[in-house]
Length: 72
Image (cartoon, rainbow, N blue to C red; front, side):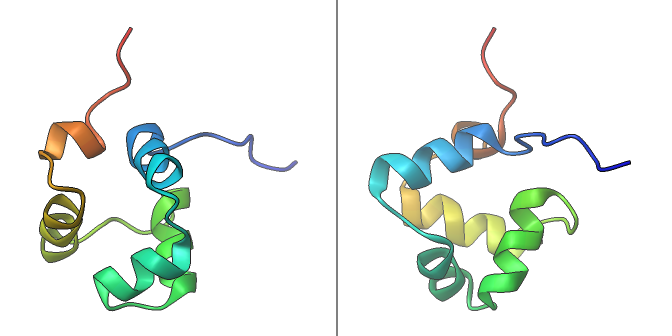
């Protein structure tokens, strides 16, 4: 049975969409492969602290604004 699709990082994906960023863009920012970005976005692999810091600087926002829980 296939795993149900879950939006693991809705805030990060929303920031990507709002800014027109692709997985290729994030791969360049994080200095990892595009496949590695996709694995992180799916939740297969955890983001490492240096990657989180790079994302916060890239989007000029806080951890909560990227990875916080979805507002009710």
